[in-house]
Length: 85
Image (cartoon, rainbow, N blue to C red):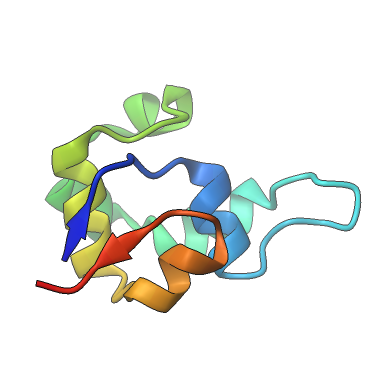
């Protein structure tokens, strides 16, 4: 998959329906259900680094797409254009 933008926690929360009607991200659910300790290890992030991060770098973005099984339609649903290889 070719993607030129980096993912943010907000993008990922929107994809998985983890944003309240007022725009609040359900961070605890995102961390508990999606960014598990195993996923953080794969991303080479500590819990502290994860907590501080808002925008993932390109390497992390591609790894997240792979690990969370995100497809082109998911990305388009949050306004990120991507193409299949």
